Length: 81
Length: 81
Length: 145
Length: 145
Image (cartoon, rainbow over all chains, first blue to last red; front, side, top):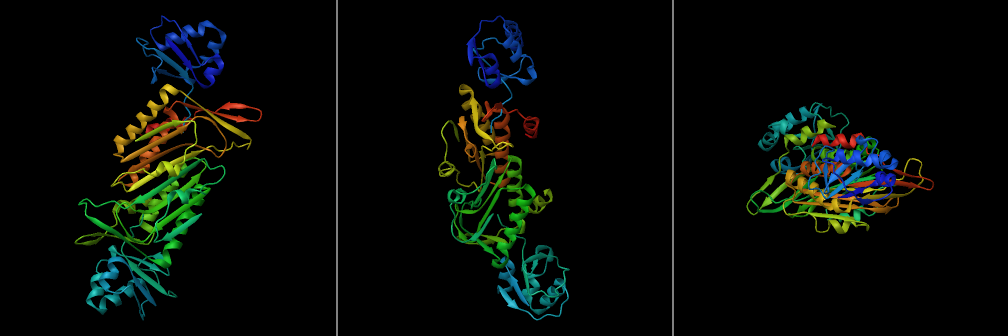
């Protein structure tokens, strides 16, 4: 699936998007996998309360299932307006 | 003093303004005098709760003194905006 | 601050051209338009006012809003005379540092214009003319402030 | 309904030219402007967004407002990219029969744009660049609705 990063999440991980192969059932599971990859992921995902997630461009929770999802995006709380 | 009427008060009394000689101490006293003049005044001033008053172009209460006042205006509740 | 009482139509765009101030991040405007009545036969809305008092009453209301919300700018325009459905009656604009203040100040201005500015509206139809009655909600809206 | 996500500047006057609808007596607009920071050394505000999601998120928020307040018209414009102090970031406009609905709908739009539209702001100064943090008040403002 495609994994996208925005704002400081993007800066910490160093890329705006990447393709990820995962067996995780939920967003939380995917986050666990990513954290185990490299330090920069562990840093970016160290505090989930500071992050938001969207599945196929809709806001979701971290316990949401990944079944059928093609695009996951991680970002800090939005600051529009 | 000058007495001004607006909106339906003006229409009921039939003039937009007139000069009035009064001995009344308060607005309420002036209203009493006017009511006694003619039917059209009695009709216009029949329900004081439906009226507002301004003294020298500032909103006032019916028990306000007329001392030094040059212009009294009677009108229904305002409907600006 | 700009307070205009006029019979002529106004152009919102032109009024907003120089509106605002440095460091004011939020601008709110309200524009009132003559609506047709429920029977859809409104010919005109006639707006009477108290010439000697109107400008000073509006200026006082605008100054109160400016002080209370630290507005960087404030604008009030109110027309009088005979207006047709669809015509703009009035507008207010507020510029504040943050959105909450800009919204509150604009609502304050509207609540006070409704019940404390010396205007009276009359609805004219083909066969009748009726003064618009003040609504209890308009008077009680002032309690919020 | 009009929802625009764009890098280019917009002209409020031009956007408002055809705005509104018959029988809508109240029009409220909100315009957001880039404010300088407290140290008065802001060079630019950089606004990042999530291109695939932005338009649909804004459209959903606008449609919610339209349904809930029976708006005759609704407009949302939000820019992205590099903006200088004083530039307009975004605007919303609402047209309703009465003023209360027009104000509420505009405040609803702003509260949701702040916390539910995928934009992120970064303040650029001569020697630093810092992401603007979301404020707890902005999140809790949503509870009102």
